[in-house]
Image 1 (tube, rainbow, N blue to C red):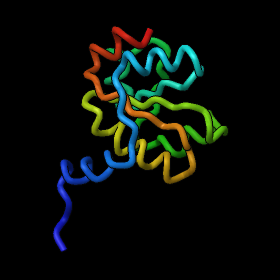
Image 2 (image 1 turned 60 degrees about the vertical axis):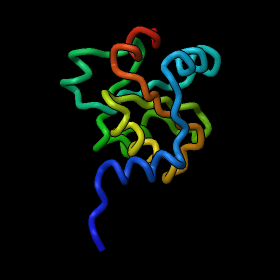
Image 3 (image 1 turned 90 degrees about the vertical axis):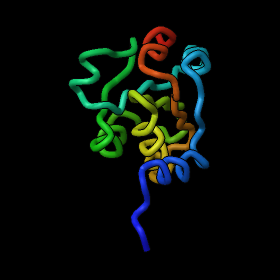
Length: 116
């Protein structure tokens, strides 16, 4: 058996992950008071962040989010710089029981402009 490449992993994970634009995410967050989570590293978040986003790096996401949000039905919107980390993160959150996880697939500038 060969190791899977990152593009293969992402393609597989994407089948089970809801991917949306920043415009859709911003509209939904206004309605449902969803949680916007930046899964990039803290240094990346400090450099450029979307308004209202909380920063939980991918490596700590499952542990930290379970402390912050105990409702498995709350809408959660994940983003990173390219959507790769967010897609893999969404798959993990679904595995532990979060049922309304979406990934914002736009670039960071677009996320920052639309999620205010």
